[in-house]
Amino acid sequence: MRFRNDLTWADVTPRPLWLNRRVMLAGAGALLATPALATPALARIEAAKSAFSTTDAPNSLEDITTYNNFYEFGTGKEDPATYAGGLTTDPWSIVIDGLVDKPGTYDLADVMKDQPLEERIYRFRCVEAWSMIVPWIGFEMAGLLNRVGVQPGAKFVAFETLVRPEEMPGQSSPFIEWPYREGLRLDEAMHPLTILATGLYGEPMPKQNGAPIRLVVPWKYGFKSIKSIVKISLVAEMPKTTWNMLQPGEYGFYSNVNPTVDHPRWSQASERRIGSGLFGGRQDTLMFNGYEEQVASLYAGQDLAADY
Ligand SMILES: Nc1nc2c(c(=O)[nH]1)N[C@H]1C(S)=C(S)[C@@H](COP(=O)(O)O)O[C@H]1N2
Ligand SMILES: [Mo]
Image (spheres, rainbow, N blue to C red):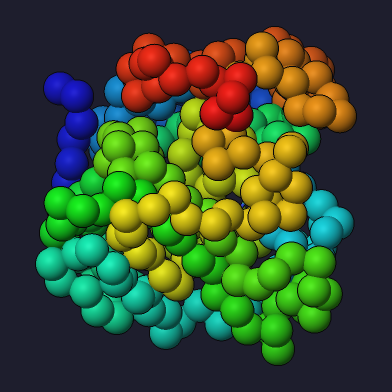
């Protein structure tokens, strides 16, 4: 019983239940201990929870939606919550091109078609040495790649975010060469932990978190998890990525969470868990953000101090 793969929006827990659950979590610090919460809807979403989920208690919806990095809306942590409301996310389409059998411009609904949605509660670790626990809703990137057909010459996947300065005030500043870009090696993109997330806390993705669809790669620093994706390209060469273009000495292509390889300007050995009281405080950063068992083999034989 690794997954239950038939979660749909109809199964998603109604908002009030999530609110109750969060109150419970905050109060008890325990995960779903209360029989009163075991309604059919909640039981379904719990059943659909993947074995890849962490058992750490999720951050509150408020933490997750008010402390964000989304430079298209400004560099302040509260800018995305303040300005992202004006982003039009419907209609939304994604260009899938490069070394694929079925290139094209796909509507979001078509991208999601037949992809089983799951809840994944993941550790999320920013390069700035803070972390959160986020209950994402999404589907495996591999499912989409298999559907469009990856051709043999493809070695990497390149991603781009929307460019729309009328709705993204941060894009009037040229400090990033827009679009925001990211990339993965093909085996990283195909790994079952790698998801395209379309929601969190059982609701469609909040705009400040990358609506309507964003990448989540939980063993890499947060900046690899590109938001509001409009283009996915299968390519033969390692693609350019935003932070690597800006500061190659600080942000490598791989950017795996690694407590033994420090950022040139600060230690990566520990992190500050966002959230008040119970969940606050510093903790040790785990190798590959706690997903070592699942992903270490991807990097066998690689020197992770060189491929940072
Ligand atoms: N398009 C885009 N994607 C982005 C960013 C960004 O500025 N623009 N910031 C990255 C960084 S640095 C982090 S830590 C995460 C933050 O995701 P969250 O706000 O949902 O926590 O998004 C990543 N994805
Ligand atoms: Mo980040």
